[in-house]
Length: 146
Image (cartoon, rainbow, N blue to C red):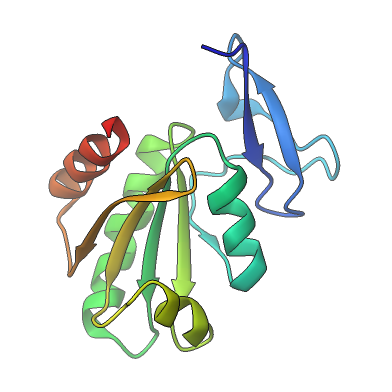
């Protein structure tokens, strides 16, 4: 296993190399100084989304959602709570499908909320619909082992 891993800054999108021997929770971006982990999902679009998927060495959990979607609004606090619990073991990202129709099309989003886990730049798992906190944590753990 490598002595370091890469994390994309949620503020400036710079790729940071972190030593595995130090706690990642307190890590700051070497470029802009922002915290690399805040315990909150990061809102991303287009190229920023693709950079986070491709360059993070941790699983990236994505919630494709829309503001008008009732189940999406109900899923939001569950997703945020899980981000607080699981970061820095995974990066949590939200993508508004209304603002990013190309991404929604590229990933074949037909119903929302649509949840994905990306690992090593590839889809490790996908799930449509709401999940309770325990199911979400289990699903992420399972997908991250693949």
